[in-house]
Length: 317
Image 1 (cartoon, helix red, strand yellow):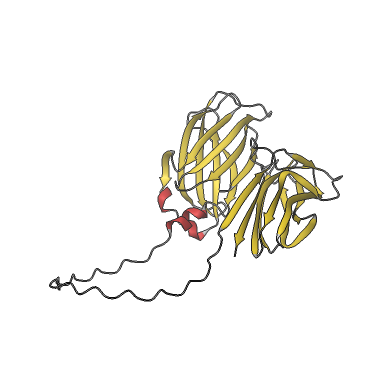
Image 2 (tube, rainbow, N blue to C red):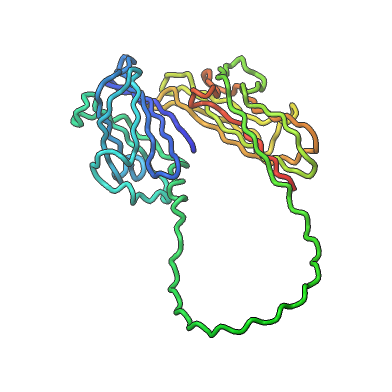
């Protein structure tokens, strides 16, 4: 599962939308916070939201629906794309395999499904194309052959002598183990952050047996603090093993860049690498450092959509 968060700004209203795609349902969770032009929450108020899935930027509307919802005291509301009031198209026949689909959001702050403001479009990236992968595209089932006639039951033969004991098979693998650490505190990365610093909570010390491999996987989010249309934040995320920088796939640069109508944008990192470590105790960490742009918020605790994680899987051979 992946999550992305965007801020939509227009003269009338501001939406902060979080879209989460999950299996096995084919619906898409959509969560947002409504604000007026002055940045004030639209709290405890009925509103209408119309969502359109487009065939490319500014393209044809493949599916459209609307929802009548009421914000809570924080201006927050939640709905499911694919579970709203039908407007046009067919949600279940969208061909996710073609890619290049966009989500267009519209808001009617009167809650009457009549006076919508276009909140802009954003591209649907890797997910929800997992919805297409989950379908499997099975091949056609072959024809069932004719059932043959049942033969007569033969007489029971004499019990044969016990055969010799076979050779002992090769020893199988000893299995695997996995553990995950989660971010427990957010951090601010400024231009003064000139050395790689541990992301709070994203560290594990494990004991590796002989002849084992360790699969290291980490993900999490950063958010730019810039509210300028052209504002952005760029930070570097890296893996360290026993205080040594890991290259070859263990180092990424993450950029959260605003654009017209979108500010305080969030971007996510995802790294996976296999390590051949010697037997014994090893410490794996996720560290970050400032690169360019505005101050960035990195990771957080379990109340934040930015919360990072670090999973170590030991494969015994």
